[in-house]
Amino acid sequence: MSVAPSRRPGDLDQAETIERFIRVDHAGEFGATRIYAGQLAVLGRGRHGDTLRHMLEQEQVHRKTFEDLIRKRRARPTALLPVWNVAGFALGVATALLGERAAMACTVAVEEAIDEHYSAQAAALGETEPELKDTIEKFRAEELEHRDIGLANEAELTPGYRVLYGAIKQGCKAAIWASERV
Ligand SMILES: [Fe+2]
Ligand SMILES: [Fe+2]
Image (cartoon, rainbow, N blue to C red):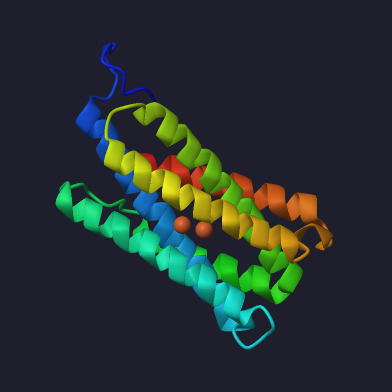
């Protein structure tokens, strides 16, 4: 998706592109808060409780920032929020029930998908929208921190790690695809 000035018929115009970016980013951050909330419901009193709360707090800031941008830019939020509300929480609970390592494997997969997504957005923005780009880059750095927390807490030692990681990452990419459009 390019926001370069030369456009072909059928390309989204700049305003539509930015609205799409904000819609999908809001959806992703909303989903992230629900995933960590689900994990905390299971593991909140365990040894990773504080780590999970730390990540949830950062996701809440990300989510609030995009909520504010949706209002400011009069963008339409995705119609799929009720789905991500339930699916995010369920993913968090399910991975936490599989164990602490599986919860961390979920974090690695989700945060990597978001990292790639934010990288692509930042590249597409180029020099347009410097403020939005700064926000995206700042959040991306924190998502990478979350991924590193997952790796440091033995995500990769989860039984069936590659399968779990692959499934969750693909699920995130599908959610991103849908949230850009619906
Ligand atoms: Fe986030
Ligand atoms: Fe994150």
